[in-house]
Length: 196
Image 1 (cartoon, rainbow, N blue to C red):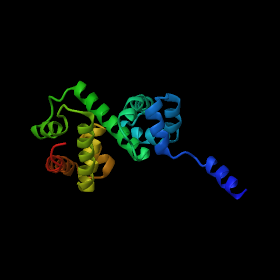
Image 2 (image 1 turned 90 degrees about the horizontal axis):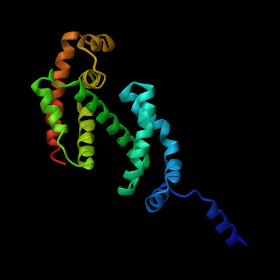
Image 3 (image 1 turned 60 degrees about the horizontal axis):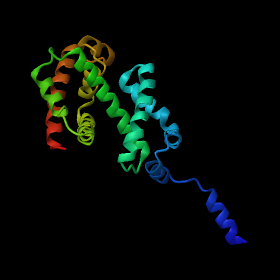
Image 4 (image 1 turned 180 degrees about the vertical axis):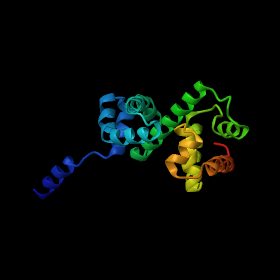
């Protein structure tokens, strides 16, 4: 009787996420993937909104990322879905922002800007791109607070020096210096990560 109780309880334990992911890889059942993705949609939306600063664009990104997962999760073995999704969402948004800036044109960029984008923009596989974007993220964390804030506002939110100064309280003359020094430090840091 005790044995049957244990067996019955064991059968009611939730299936570990890794097993659900493996089952999806085998079956390709999109509804099963939807069940896996659902608890993380708020987090993915939050990450997207942090970068895109637009509610509708962020909602679209949540759905685009799900569509991307249909293919990607069949190809990659993921051990921690939450942190992997965080990276995927961040990379998706960075690519979207970079793509939007490419369409707008980069004629106004200084040489240092071109070099920084070139360090990230080599054309190769998504895994290599993910590695470079991870390196960018790591390197951003190594910048001083002032450099990091100025670069995020200038490049990701496309704010001008005056707006950055107003938003952060930094002296306007310092903002340009923070951006230039931050770009230089990022370029050095990304290059030191080596090739991916």
